[in-house]
Length: 137
Image 1 (cartoon, one colour):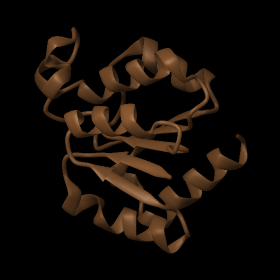
Image 2 (cartoon, helix red, strand yellow; image 1 turned 135 degrees about the vertical axis):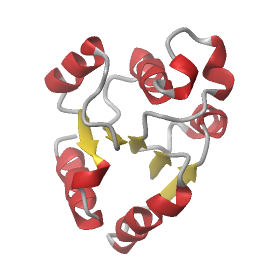
Image 3 (cartoon, helix red, strand yellow; image 1 turned 120 degrees about the vertical axis):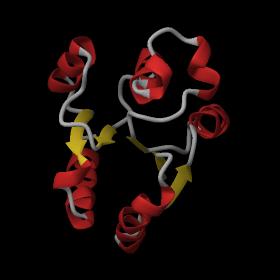
């Protein structure tokens, strides 16, 4: 199952539809609190994570580094990577780059992590990225 964490469900609808048409089971968490809860309860079922960067920080607001929601996805990514190095993760954002050198370096060196810019990616391209990363697992 693919877990998508993004606070703009309307924009993600076409990507979710394309993933489902490609026979992937997809769940959407619309905020970070929902994502944390879902991940804690069902992490053994999650085969892939697609994660936005800029979201309200919710429970992560107590964590250092969320920068009032501008880096919530990065903090969540780090939290996941601390315990799970093998889960394929796409950071899917409108930002042109990740504003965190450590995470950027980790993504470049980890074939299970990738940064994909939303503005440059149509739905079938996201499916292609997912398929490629899953085939490397």
